[in-house]
Image (cartoon, rainbow over all chains, first blue to last red; front, side, top):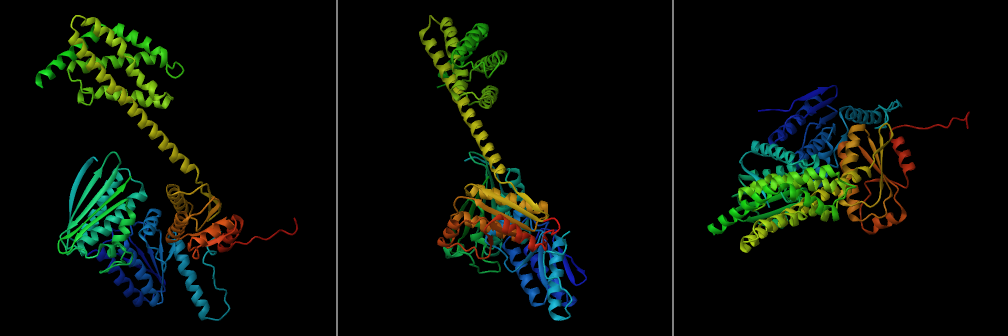
Length: 141
Length: 133
Length: 293
């Protein structure tokens, strides 16, 4: 059976969806990801959906589920690269994925994950090291 | 209304859902739909195809390209499943008996211009949607 | 039925023969006929008109020779094509629909004259031929009007689209900050274009913040507010934040009265404060140069 590969990059897991999503594939991705998060103790998950030409309610639910499940496992999820046409359709469908963080592309998504990690680390270690709390500011030049 | 071409596709298993999405994408692109309109009709087709497979126990879909006076795409999903006892309720947001988000039927309705559903308990369900260019 | 058909076949072939015999005369008289009301020498050259007339007469003769006088049938395909092209080009040149139809109608008199001379001894045959010509030319005239109308509608539709695109300029304010100043009433069609061009621009310019300025929008009703909300939500799904600016006091009142929930949307009184917020979100601060001030 085909599978969507999950890459490990440091503390983060990276998923690029490049095939036509059918329901069983979506469910197995959900399973594999949660297993990988707990195995690798990953702190963040980045899902690149820039190649997806539709997101219907099932795939939408999968994304929302992954975000909620990973949060329980102490990992942040960010979905990146949603196409404008897909976003418009999803809103029209009635799905706003309120619990899911988003970013324009992989770079911006990594930035979101890193800064949210810094945020929590900053809270844990009270060393006064200046944590980058600004989600937006860091890769501006 | 002139129907330029009609084709029927089986709708029995999950790969059929993916195949229908692809076909609807191709036809709507040929008809000159904008990218957003293509995406809307493909998404609606995906929702309804899934319903037919999961709740209707499989069925068929008929794809009709309409040409003149208006250009459009009509899709007819038909199954001989258990039917929907309360269509009004099923169209409401958040209603689900299965694993979706309960947006399938109502969501599909919002993505198209015309939406018609006929369902008889014990006999089956027929959903007709049309998206105009 | 069959005899009538054969009869009319023969009659139409007879007209074709008349046309062939008197081609030059008909052409000359026809063009003279047109010079009165519908020449429009300001819009079309004499030589072009002459060529069109000659071509049409030729097609008319060919069609009549087949004996089929139903203008919808395939033997008149070429004639329909020719008249279609003519109507479309005249619509583009600025002719009136009546002037376009007159191209066909003005042929009646010269053609009638020749046919009358040909069968002046047979009143019944003459009447039938007249009937065939009238019916044929009438349906051709109607056809030109139909095509004319269609191409005008097409023109209007295209202009509307162009206007829509022109009326929604997405401007870049800073690296990563877009602004969309909306001016005029937002209806469903326009909002969709606005929404799509904004979202597309977000991807193209890689902007994380988009400001929708509605200073120039006279009223906001439930539908417009909903469209704005949808745009904001779609942008968020793509990974960009929207700020709505230029909300005038009466619009703020309407929004609250209508019970529209804009709580999840960042709103600012004017574009300047929205831009300031955008820069702050990007971590950019400005410092006044004290030496220069």
